[in-house]
Length: 168
Image 1 (spheres, helix red, strand yellow):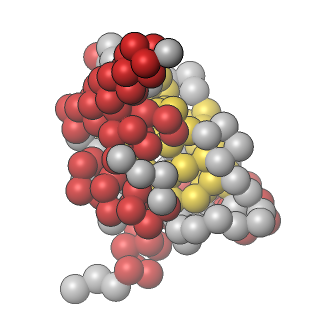
Image 2: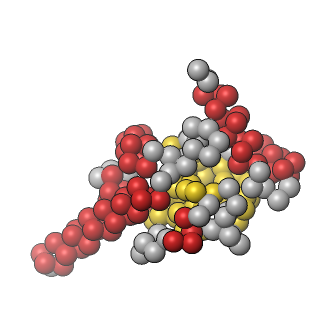
């Protein structure tokens, strides 16, 4: 059995493999809570607007979102409050095949500010934190699960907009 801290440490070491400079990334995590990591080698990241996630989950409550996303995506997700975006980490090959509207997949040639693995709630150092922490190295969201969540959220938002326009 691995403790949460051991899983966090091995996930951190794995994520650091995507850093252009490991020492600098560690220092950025320590100082700022976030470090720039390169997408497309170890992982891709699907950027999902908060409105889509909130619609799919039926809530904007942080704890309820964490439970929903852990169940729906079964992989790591962090939230960036400054951009009102969720980021689901997926296998590196996801970006080549991604064609889901309203959710961009960041692959090769993209850098992403990734929060330190220990940040699982808002922190004054940065606007990003893990809403579903990494469970270990390479434990990523399946692209089909992410696509399904995005499509569900988009559909619910469209239905809500249609009802609102019909009542206006």
